[in-house]
Image 1 (cartoon, rainbow, N blue to C red):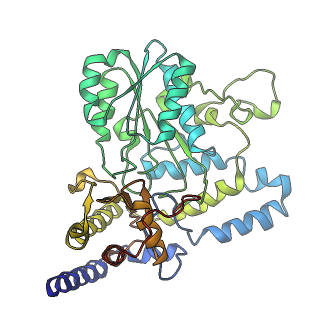
Image 2 (tube, rainbow, N blue to C red; image 1 turned 120 degrees about the vertical axis):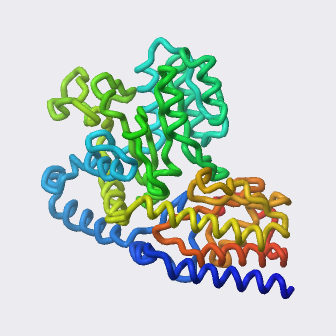
Image 3 (tube, one colour; image 1 turned 180 degrees about the vertical axis):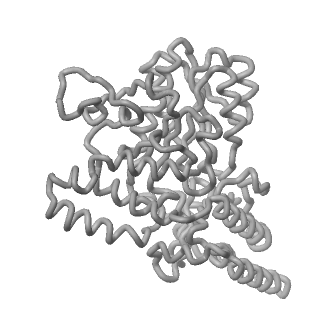
Length: 421
């Protein structure tokens, strides 16, 4: 008992010291977080940025209520997909004019996969990660059926060898730089280069990376990328997603959903479709202005933030939590599945529970003020957003999880009628 108390005291001292030295601590004020809640589920839904309520109030009460249809021009609604796209582009390392926002992640991903396949029409293979998020796999299958392609499932670590053997047959490779379950970080540079050396296109799903770590899609030569607005970008539930297409592909880009707003002359209402120049051709339908402008306001939380410093803090937080887990949770049957090496983890830590009680533990944690996430049956995910997360938050999560487990103060199989978090 004395040893356990000493270890906890040491962790408290370390957390206090790390937080005192945190030069980004003031950024927490940019979010409206509930008091006495440790929020570690920002990798599923970011919290409310402080700038959003006033922005939405203005959109509803002034731009919509007073400006009415005139706000499409006067308030800049029509250009919002391009403007917000460029704001996201700054966070992923994209020069202006290559990123657009406005549709759901699924729509953007379908567009990107199908457009990439069309750019390599004589190649019969679409390669993706067998551990990809389900939607990515479902849509890869859907595009393969539409384009008469064969899907090959290849783990990221095996991709270079696969491409060396069959690369000339591959049209597009579709991966995420961060494993959504484990938080493992893959090498975008190596995999992008391997794909392009084989003549294939590299498509990245940045849902668990955009806003969490520095990205350089232009510098890496990425062909296409997609990502959501509601995780680390904190754009709100169901926030619009983004699509990046490298400028070199714009003139030949053919999207599978040629909507009227992507037309070269949308208000001519022509009988046939002529794509707009540049990334604007990836517009589809009338943009969801309320949610799009909420995302635009949310992105101001990154104003003036050096993403390299944000990444440094994120690694400090996850490293500290891994230490907390080692000292407080390993004796209780928890095992980290997130790599310990800093260069191999994203902005989350995932723990595996020996008795596969992840759902029950996540529900019990929420009841004591720690909101995390889980993947049944045995994975607990703790998402870290260095804009507002503290080392104290990480220690609080670890100690409350320890207490719940020691006291068996949770239902191992709670009802599954709705989401846990």
